[in-house]
Length: 286
Ligand code: ADP
Ligand code: MG
Image 1: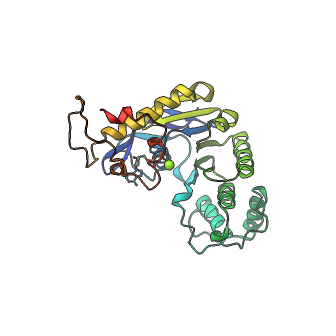
Image 2: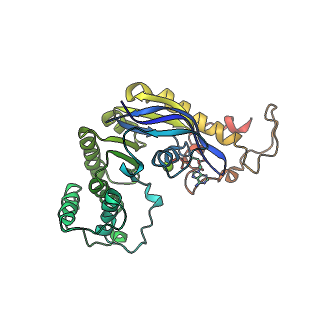
Image 3: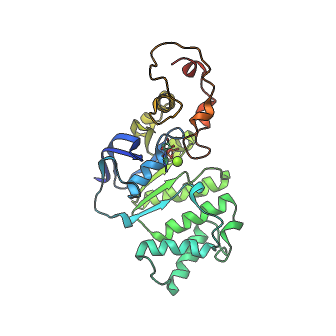
């Protein structure tokens, strides 16, 4: 039985698709890793699922629950850490999402907050301001918020980016625990080894789906290579690249193609990894 059905879904920005023709479903109680190169549409997909982004085509069908029943952990880059808040404020958002905005925090909530913080190894951190937390501690606090939100569906966007191994292990444990409780969990990840070890399902994305299914068959070296090539090919063809004046890509031409700074259409830092581990030839001649 599916929890989330994706029907010929196209998502994008300003009318330009970022993810397209995605079809499939996340089964109720499934634990899925979303993998793919930078810019392959992983964050876009999560935003589409939680309803923050309206589809350009197709639809997302939630089976038996509403948007409010989704807990969402954004990429760290999207969190404003200068916001003058303490850890307890961060967790209060979890209660609000569970019960509706501006419900008062009750006495019992403090107990629950303490328990959630203890579960993620942050006992005694309620009054700490979030700008004093390390990356790992902030990620733990965000997991505590997911705990208090107590949602049947959990979306995690790169929860393990730039954090220490110990935190990765502890939080992977918590994800496995949520899976054991029958929650539907979708996490954007980068570490294939970790995914093979702890995530039964994988959706490999390259703006369109490359593979979606059991991790052992979906997450192969071949598929990963294919995903990388697809994202690069897409970047080359993207119609909104202003520098892309010559429309005829069939002939060989020998002008300099090293003007890669022109490709910086994405958020900062997103365009890195596909410029390195890639033979120059595929860009040198279209
Ligand atoms: P990923 O999370 O896999 O790195 P994203 O979903 O963030 O990829 O991005 C997919 C594509 O959509 C990229 O080309 C990115 O530049 C573009 N994109 C993402 N967010 C926006 C936005 N707010 N406005 C315009 N384009 C965006
Ligand atoms: Mg992302």
